[in-house]
Structures are given as structure tokens and as C-alpha cells.
Length: 259
Image (cartoon, rainbow, N blue to C red):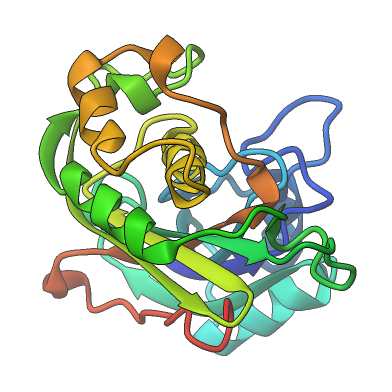
């Protein structure tokens, strides 16, 4: 039996999602918790591997099991064995045709910037602080140059292992709510550090260091050296995955979870 899961986590204490020997990671915690419920070793695959310090409100994963458990048992059994920073939101049996990563057709991230002259306290590891005043209108204008199918080499880290840099960007939205500036992106897939590199560029434009057209110029140059700084990890949230309707999976909205 294959089981799909919706998972939420605070990435602050973890070295990312992926299993690493000698490093605390989300995958190992989830597998250990599920193994106790299943009474056998469990290996999970996720929709999108997040980096150190990156959070998720709607990560999706799947695993195979011979254990017969109810959906409620998978959720509450796993959560009783997970640290408070990780929670399974839902569990659902799916066909063997489903794969958390390869069946996904869209992924969504949200980047949150706390924009005031004094640093945050309670939100310190859940937002990125920017003391310079940001013009979100300029940022939103710049972001539209990235919508569509493009080669995103400029925004790809040197450690990226993707086979090619072309992605389809469905939308890039920027808006403000008080001191919080939000950047939300949705695409068919993302390159390593792509969203953080894009956020760094938009912040520079919002601060008046560059004109909005710089975003288009960087895209056309396809050169990471010209692409500005990589924004910090702790402002980034993995907020959703879209799958074909045939799998009928629940969807967790980021509203209320990431403001």
C-alpha cells in the first residue's frame, strides 16, 4: 500500500529535508516516526527537498507499507513520535502510480521579508529582516519579467544538480501587509537556491539599488555571477504542490499559516 502525507515543519533546527549522516534532518525524523506506527522501516520521498532553515506548510511525501492502519492512525501515530517542529497534517492511500516528486505539476513557495528599521524578535527565524525601505510596487513590476518559460541559469546555484535550467514560471506575485513584504512564486519546478536568488534580486530593486528592468537583463545574461546575493533561508516557505486531479489529494492553504 502506498500512503501520501501532507507535512508541515519549522525548518529552523534542521539541515534541510534530505537525510544526511550526522546531521539533524526532517526526512530522518519523519521516517523514524512512521516506522514506529508501521512496525517496520519506512523510506519516504517528498515533493521538494528544502534546504537548511527553510520551512514548509504543505510538503507532500509518500511511502510504501505492508501495515494496515487507518488514515487517522497514520496522522496521530506519527505526530505522537515527532518533535513539535514537525507535524503530519493528513494521510491518504494512493495508487502506485503516484509519486510525491514526479507526479507534481506545480510547486509553490512564499518568501517573507520583515521590512522595518529595527530587527524582529519573535519572528527572527521565520522571516528575513530588511532594514532598508522596500518599494513593493517596483518589486512586483520586476518580477513579471520572469513569468513564462525561461532559462533560469542566473538564479541557479553552482551546486544545483538539475539536468537543465529551463523552468515554466506560472506566476510571481509581490505584495505588502504592514511591515511584511511577500514574494510568492509558482512554477513547474525550481532550481537549487532559485527562489532565494530571485528574492535577493527583488530586494535590491525594491531598495532602489537597481531598476526593475535589471530583472530581465539578469535573466537574459544567464550568468550566476551577475545575479546578486542569495537571500537568507529562514524567510522561505514551501507552501504547496499541485497534482493531477485523479489523485484527489487534500491541499493546505498557506493563508493563516504564513500570514
